[in-house]
Image 1 (cartoon, rainbow, N blue to C red):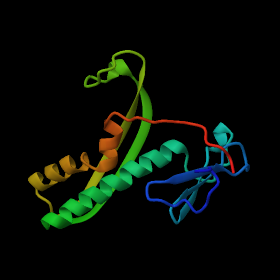
Image 2 (cartoon, rainbow, N blue to C red):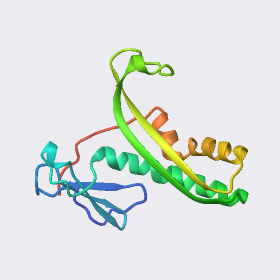
Image 3 (cartoon, one colour):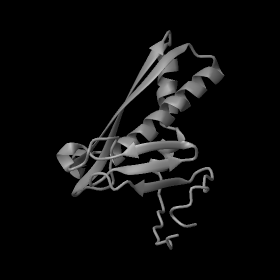
Image 4 (tube, one colour):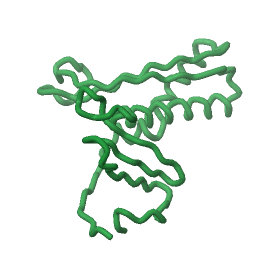
Length: 154
């Protein structure tokens, strides 16, 4: 598939094109949806959209919230609202007691979940367990095989 075919809107396909506005601005097409990615001005971008790590966090946060909501609704739990706040940073491996890597730097994503509603302690604990089972969380925690190859233009 050539990289500039607009008709390719198969589920699971995302097309990213540089806009040539600023150093980093990218136009993203996901099915019928379009958005802009960029870098903050302090890194030389225009700050016209979220950066790549912000988009990664948004995917995890959205999936987590959707998964918790779906479970709560299925089980009839009194969950009024769910909010997910995420942060990404690099930490020293030796600061992570549960990690296999013990040297250098590792990626850390911190996920803070607010569960609003008249939930008891068991329901809250169960929803927090369910949050870790969202598909994006599972993907990020699994072995990922990314295959990058050049594709002919046009």
